[in-house]
Amino acid sequence: MKLVAFGDSFVEGLIKKPIENSIEERKKINFVSQLLNLDNPFSTVENFGARGSSNASIAHRVWKRAQEDTRDCFFLICWSSPYRYGHYDNHVDNYRTLDLRKEIINEKDRQFETDSFIFFIKSLLESYNIPYAQTNSFATLENRLPIQHYINANYICADQKRHTLFDIIANRFNSNLDLTANDFESNHDMFDVPASDLIALCKHPTDQGHKKIAETLSPFLKKIIDNNAN
Image 1: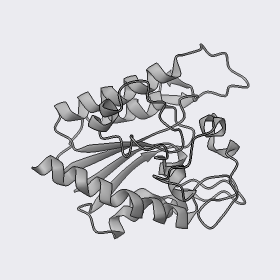
Image 2: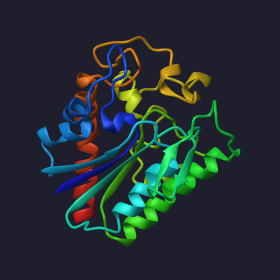
Image 3: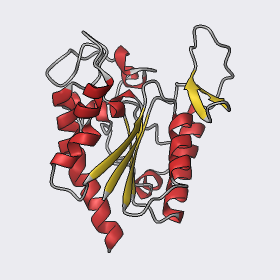
Image 4: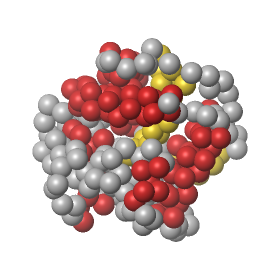
């Protein structure tokens, strides 16, 4: 089975500090590639993770990829911060990240947009009979809708306070640790957590952090695949 993953720099495998890693290093250490080393059905990967991706750009990549050959594929969608903005560039048929310091943007209802993407992807992939899972790199769900809706959209551990990829490397995944205002910051580099063997200085996962993410996600992905087969 091919694992097709979408997301931002956490999915890409980017580390910015103390030294930015190369594209080849990112391809090697990212958790999507590391999932191939574990006990699951995945034998190949396609990684569409790209630094700075907005949720609009992530949804757009999923929509485009779903129109191609999806036989024996599993889609993993890792959403990013709802505060990120993207601008569609028709010259490249893709979204580019906006520099909020230089560009004028229109405000948006972040939670409405986030939920719209989550449930659009559920509808799209289920109509194609593509097994899938959803999660987020570092932004916690606000759960404006009944929690069962997110669970039914294969959002991993949506009923838990701590369910992001960052929570995994911060050693608080599925813990009872209460959320604070800090957990809803616009970017992961603003989180008040120390660097460690799992968290780089730039607050991205290290190679060991990616390994832990892969080990944590693998059982959830296997369960979804098994349920989809029944």
